[in-house]
Image 1 (cartoon, rainbow, N blue to C red):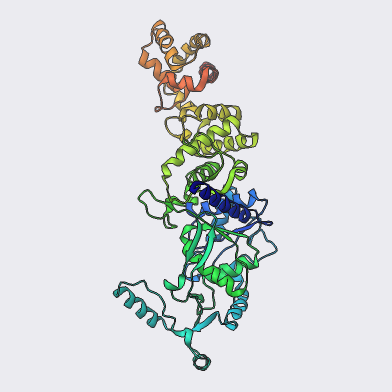
Image 2: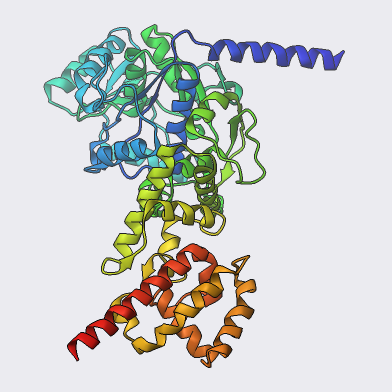
Amino acid sequence: MICVRENLLKLTSYRKVHKALCHSNVRVRFAPSPTGLLHLGGLRTALYNYLFAKSHNGSFILRIEDTDQTRFVPEAVEKLEQDLKWIGVVPDESETVGGNYGPYLQSKRLALYQKEVQTLLHNGSAYKCFCSDSRLNLIRKDAVKSGLVPKYDNKCRNLTQEQIDEKLKENSKYCIRFKLTNHTESWQDLVYGDISYNVFHNEGDPVIIKSDGFPTYHFANVVDDHHMNISHVLRGVEWQISTTKHILIYKAFGWTPPKFAHLPLLLNLNGSKLSKRQGDMSVEAIRNSEFLPNALINFVTNFGGGFHDHQRTSKSQLFSMKDLVEKFDLQLVNENSCKVDLTNLNEFNRAEIRRVMSTGTQEEIRSLVEKLKQHIVNEFPNSSLQIDDDYLNYVLCWASERIFKLQDLVGKDFAFIWVKPSIEHLSQHPVESYGILEHLIPRLQTCDPFTRDSLATPLREFSTEQGVEYSTFMKLLRTSLSGLKQGPSVGEMMEILTKENTIRRLRDVLEYSRTVKNSTATAG
């Protein structure tokens, strides 16, 4: 009987959540503050909002909450938009894109906040507070000394109208505070379930309009979410404690709150919270480190659930954004915080290269080839290079199980793949010494398979037949294939280059030697 009752409760809860999710017009927003770089926690919030909106044919809005002018970082908004565009999270409405609910920059909405706060002042839900900073600091210090949580004592809540008018005549600075009510407010978190909290017992009346006329987050986000018709608020669980306060503000206006869902924290390996001050955890740093956007998307969505058929025990299978939209389910998001090991991003990037080269679209493959080509040109600006598209395509297929990032292919171990020997390199050996290559090429054409192990004996036998010391022969071959002194063994180089490209390079060297001989003979 108990089991049946528990199952009925679960079914009832599921139906409540399902009804909450199936909103007729889903509109969500990502509303960051321009106080620094976008980090992985912020990216996860933006991404889950985007996936939720698209999975319900809804709208994803980018709103910039720049009301804290003391922490504003110039160019932060531009960098944020670049990061989101790079990752493929493109807003349907924003200050840049436009839309019917703008402006989407809170500093341009000050008149709206001033208008709406008058409603709360008139209905008695808010009041002007004239307490000085020094008084507030004293309250804070006294609480700390007593081992209590600092909170405002609500002194100005009880000022008479005469006292208020007198303060205004004196041009006293004031902020506007919201009156908290002393009762337990209950609401449903679409991830964490039923929440009940009496904020009055733990906090003083919060400031909603600062003395500089700018709204606080608590007030502005409520006003904006209402006026932008936001249906669901998905944000980090650190804001869950403030949600009761926000619901009280909605009720004071007589507005219907949106549905709330809070996402579990992303933590560092030591258990501390991710921060904007951690440069290596920023999207910009990850992008500059040449990771691929879809690798990062899959890396981030691998934390905390939220997807059907997405319970991966390895990084071998990656999904496209379209796949993730189809698989996303808010009911599957976990409640537990997740530790982030950034080193695992390497494996996701390798898996993305493998996915593109095995099942990717022609556009994806072409994009990867062009990125690799740019890396090669930048790394070897004055070298003779082999970088035709077919060759690059072949190398990427071969390397997809061997590298983590494209830039690995321009390191010293793989430089020979691209760099063909220059005249300066070839001149290190007497031009006559290259003549034996004419006899080597037919021998190599019969070698099958063309691997490091299978080439070892034929190459050693050939050097003996030609009366050339093996080490000298290997140096000659290394110069003929790449001109580089560093890299893998000659046999491994030949295997990686393949028989076709090995023979092509040796023929180029033969052509060089003939040209030099002819020019020498003509000059003589």
